[in-house]
Amino acid sequence: MAEYDTWRPWPIWSAVWVGALAAIAVGLIIGLIGFAVGAHELTAPRFTTWKNVRFITAIFNICGAFFAFVVGGWIAARIAGLRRAEPAMLHGGVVWLLAIPMLLVLATFGAMSHWGGWYGALGGSPAWLTTVPPVEPEAARAFRNTALVTVAALLLGLVGSVLGSWMASGEPMSVTYYRRRTLDVERPRRVA
Image 1: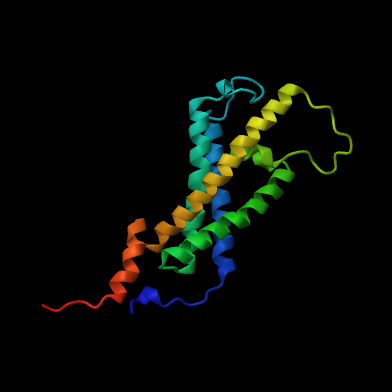
Image 2: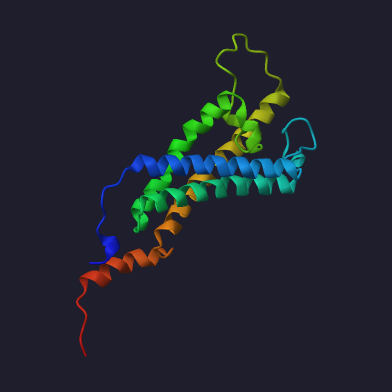
């Protein structure tokens, strides 16, 4: 039996917390770099049509959402010392699940603007706002587009977190490897 076949219980929350915090920190760094190079500037005041989004803005948003969680998942799996892909990928998913409420809290306090535009729909209206102003059609289109980008960023973050933790496990990133892994162990080898 190989060393990585015996799995020991570990304190899940220490690795997952550090992974979630790392994902948020890397997302912040990528967002601030995007602002520094001018990648998050729009050609119009509101995001009502896709023509208003520059190509470099889309690249920063997609890559930022993905690679921030790749780092978070990788760190969580390495801290936990997971050598099998399946538990590592599960922990990457838990990193993503823990980071979502953290992002919602940051959005509630208005701190999501530093991450660029990809998590813009998480903010919504503050709970302490008692009167809701009427919604203009242009603002409704802008919120729809922002919500679409936010959903895509969240799902890309989940994929990034799972892939990052899979990379950290050290197992080959091939689906056929998992089918052969149990067959190779169960079959007796012929001696010539």
